[in-house]
Length: 277
Image (cartoon, rainbow, N blue to C red; front, side, top):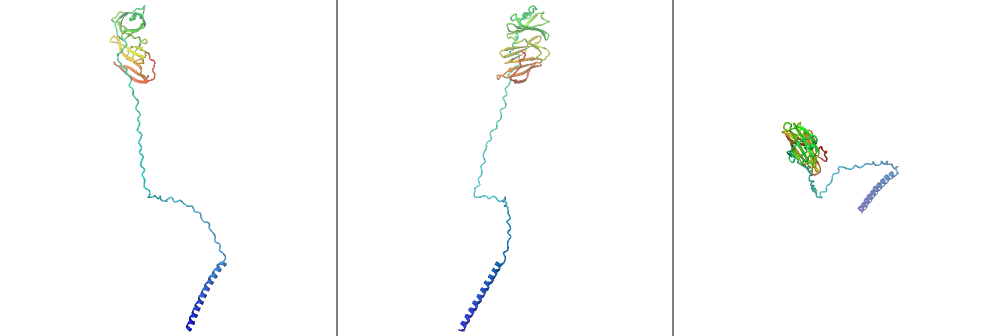
């Protein structure tokens, strides 16, 4: 009985202790909270945020998606256009210009005439007895006369003072072709002695005969056949032009070097001088 009461008192005492502990704890907490509420509120100074500028990261590595298969672009084949080379201008060879006596208008002839002062040139016009023009002079120590016949053609005569009597003229050259003008007496060979240079025109062609005294007798030493031709006889040379199928003129300068005829100075042009033959 006494032990039961003792146990009851012990439980009562323990409960009172717990009650005191709880009351003290609650009261302290209440007092602490009350002091916080009674204390003046502190003012917190707000600092505005600092603005910052974001800088782009330029070192961001390139992310390659390895799941995409690598493709190779095939090079495009380009074929260079073939080089075009301009064809060199076609070189057209000059027309032939033989430097011979072939085709000469004059040929050798014989005959005799007596000069008569009363009739003049007609007295030595052996072809028809009538002359349209004539002249007499001395070449290479030989007396020479030329006659253009009124009926056409021409004649070259000579008088050798050591053989022939005065007034006697021997026919040495003759042609049935009438010269285009009186012959020129000029030194085209450049040897210091004059020659007779005849021009013969037929349609548009021009023939040229150069007559020189050789071994005491006149003879043809050069014939030129010039289609569409023109010619100028001068000291030491002949300048001649002939036309081509395209209408251009081909020019040559003809000279005699020693005993050989030569040509040089070739050129083409669209026009040419009239010449003197």
